[in-house]
Length: 122
Image (cartoon, rainbow, N blue to C red):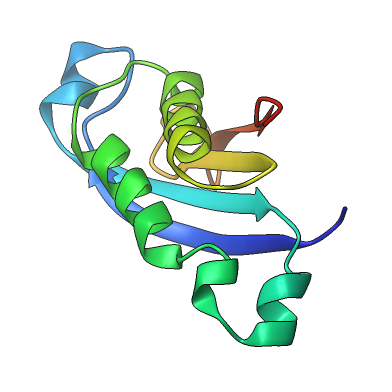
C-alpha cells in the first residue's frame, strides 16, 4: 500500500549529542514523519476517526525531542517510531531526524538518519 500521511520538517530545540557540551545547550533539530495506512476509508467518509490525527504525532515528536537527552540521532528516531507504533493505528512509520548545526569541519546543511519500522501483526 502506498497511502501515507506526511509531517514534514517539524523544527524543535533539544539537548542531544555525543559531547557533553552539545547536551548542555538546546540546539535545533528537524524531524519528518511518514505514516503508512489505508487512507481510503477516511477519504470516502471525510471522517477523522477513520484516519490518524496529526496532533498526537506532533506531540510524540515534541515530547521525544524536548524531553530527555539522547546521544545519537538513531536513538531519537527509534524512540519516535516506537512511540508512534505503540499508540497509533499505522502499518509502518518512517522517521527522519536532522541536526542542522552539526560541526564536521566544513560546509554542511545537516547530518541525519532515516529509519523505517513496521507495526507488529495485529
